[in-house]
Amino acid sequence: MQNDGNNNFNNQNGQPGPGGYEYNPNEFQGGQNNYQNYNNGQGGYDPNGFNNGGFGQPPQNRIILESCYNLRRMAREALRGKWLMASVAAYIIVLLLSIPNGIIDGLFGISMPLTDYMSSLGYTDLGPEFDAVMIKASPLSGIYSLLVTGPLTFGMTAYFLILFRRGKETLGDLFSGFEFFGKTLGLFLWMCLWIFLWALIPIAGPVLAIIAGFRYAMAFMIQVDNPSLPIRDCLNRSKFMMKGNKGKLFLLTLSFIGWLILAAIPGAILGAIFGMFTSSIVVLQIVSYIASFATSVVVAYITTAQMAFYDMLTGRIYGESYVPGRY
Image (tube, rainbow, N blue to C red; front, top):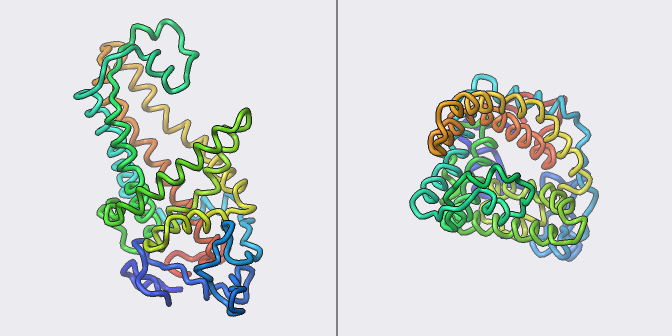
């Protein structure tokens, strides 16, 4: 499949989403992802076949056997010459999710000891030395996060999906999720609800919640390619695609831990230096925001690798045959 240079990759299913490609189930006929409509005996995707989270009678899905090394290589190939702008894009999302929260807490928050605030989140093992640390927190910042995380996640996914597919990504793509505000907010809240319900299960809850997170990991990518797709169908399709692939995505994510640790070092050094001269939470927070750019570089790297993983799941690319700009 050839990029037409316009973020509008060839498809047979109408207008594509911001990612430049609308999922066309007919492309999978004859392969291991031959979605069979058992209601009428015809090949292709059955829009009524999502019963019990499947596509009619689901066939075997694609299992990603590609090495994490090769997935990272694909990400580096796509990022070649675009590292700076991709890092800036990730940095903008980080700032949009964090700075307004700080401002809202500063203006409307209630002062409380850090230990009390962390206890309300379930962390009770902070030492008494933190009792003297005061912070300001407001429920309004939580409402802000709930409202914007979905659209911004959609926008960031659209940006990096376009980048990986060699389209013409722009920073404006980061805000494309607000064009579909209701659907992106709904998808985020619906995902959070299910992950939260899994987390409530005694003892095994935290582990099951993590597994659920990986189960729904493709939902926003699917929504970017198919903005008109119902929220429930995005989750169901992600569940189907991730059968047998959750472990591989976990390993891929885990393979970046060394880079994340390395990226955290500048922030730790700057925080320690400024901490010797000031105890101002505002100053230290600004230093933290500045230092987080290093982490944004790794976030861009991870996100691009996840786009490679997704395009393998849809069958658009194959590892060793991957050539930038050609599918």
